[in-house]
Amino acid sequence: MKAFKFTKLLAIGLTATMLFAGCSSTSQKATESGSKGDETKPEYVNLYTDRHYDSDDSLYNAFTQKTGIKVNIVKGKSDELIERLKTEGADTEADLFITADAGRLHRAKSSSLLQPVDSQILKANIPENLRDSENYWFGFTKRARVIVYAKDRINPAELSTYENLTNPKWKGKILVRGSDSIYNQSLLASFIEIMGEENAKKWAAGIVANMARAPKGGDRDQAKAIAAGEGDIAIMNTYYFGLMLNSSDPEEKKVTEKLAVFFPDQDGSGTHINVSGGGVVKDAKNKENAIKLLEFLAGEKAQKSYAEANYEYPVLKSVDSSDLLKSWGSFKEQSVSLSKLGELNEKAVKILNEVGWK
Ligand code: FE
Image 1 (cartoon, rainbow, N blue to C red):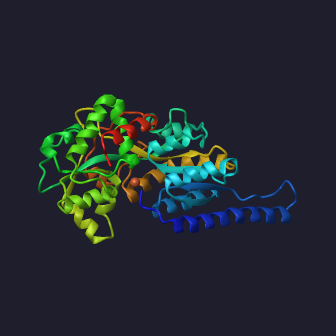
Image 2: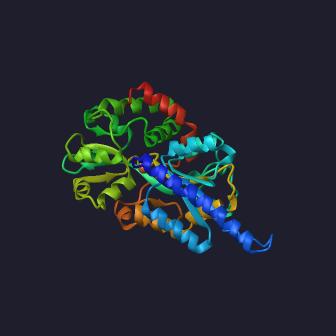
Image 3: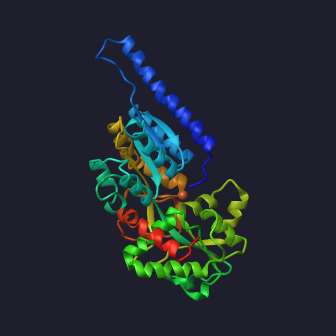
């Protein structure tokens, strides 16, 4: 996710606080003007989210239009929001927590910040491996962690698996962000599940040995580094490549002209996938509204929006990917249950430290 400015959090936090306060004063007015017991309390849901896309705000507006339920939003970095939820405890105003990566969703669950939800709609719309095994969180957009390569220097016939990237022939050519990235932690966690701890450690060590430079920056910076000639192959999430291709920044767009996407492990366990998702906060005061919003996000309208506006893969089978994603071709996905990524996160972090992945 994009770097977040604290001032923005504060500003949005204040706005949200004012909105929350506004709700109670409106409800007071409703009580004053009506007789007791027939009070028309405005419906709302309070959302903590680390997503930062304008298209998400449009979706929340569409939800309000459809249901009459107002969405009050607090945006922030995922770990900051998790800390905030811990600090606020039972007093929290938050009803729904949304974040990227199953590893983080699991972190919220294991910190006792979420509660299980029994929803037929969520179960029907979201494949089993993309939601928590005990229904504490639900993935509603999918992304793949793929290989992006320099078209003028790499023959795609030489690419195959994630493991192949550890071949000494790629020494000094691999670009990937740091070990503090949950995306890399979850990628490695998937390998622990698929090939066992020892082999996963060999993989991580092999990548470190082949790195073009000490890891820095986000996924987009790895693509930019290929274009700048610092390396030839990057590991990155699909939506970042889609966003760069359609960027309003001509420089970013130019970078992508030199690059192409490759889906690894198509003859084996499949390309690594992960989700953005959400869970109902343990002490939610508006639990039913939070569930309604989750169900809306897993529904057709929202799924189409994620696919078109943000180049994410829909989780709902009846909704098509965007034309751009379709142009990259369909691919075999890892079938690992994303709950496992969270459960194995600690082991993954330990391995990354042990092999010296900065
Ligand atoms: Fe991201």
